[in-house]
Length: 243
View 1 (tube, rainbow, N blue to C red):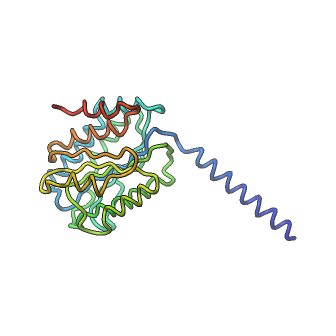
View 2: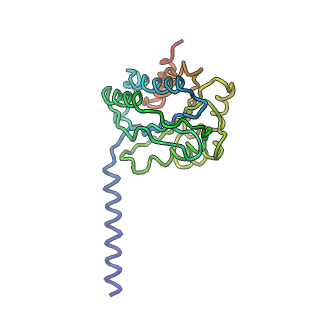
View 3: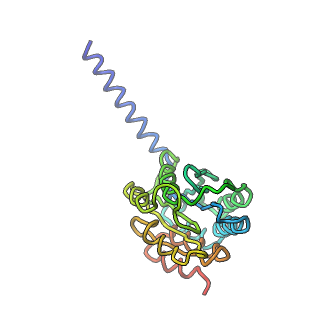
């Protein structure tokens, strides 16, 4: 009797392992899994919110971004878009989406332009909480890649929730890279804060936007640098910005 029980336990264990392996094998390979997280705290008014959304949309419509996607070995990426503000106030606006062409990039851009703003309340700026939340989104997302990146854009420092630095360290320890897009304005040292407290992981970088009017240029440069394959991706990104 004991041997039969042991046999069935072994069969169940092997079946479970095979199911997990087949489920993972079914994940679609991509060059990059990218979580875009955008600050929508009260400090960002409606006009600034619009410029932020339009900046992302323009970037995904840009031929240079499409070319960067097509330059990868697999020639496709997976992207999800999150809006965040205070503690417990993070929401996925666009779920994981495969982008492998100008048409799929345009569809993603259209969603960014048409979906409503998530939060209007004054929940504060919880950069650390946004990082912890973003790190949970990679599990069972239907994609697999060697690069998993969290992208944080915002116009202020953490003033709610857990500090950004420890959150950054935890997220990086899980194998993720964090890049930043600080929106310069009321805080002239925000780029330094992002460089020292927010970004992390191999090759992590930050591209400051000189205000919301410069947001589209900064997003485009950042996306090209994140996505482009090969050792010259930084040169490509820098060349994408106007003089």
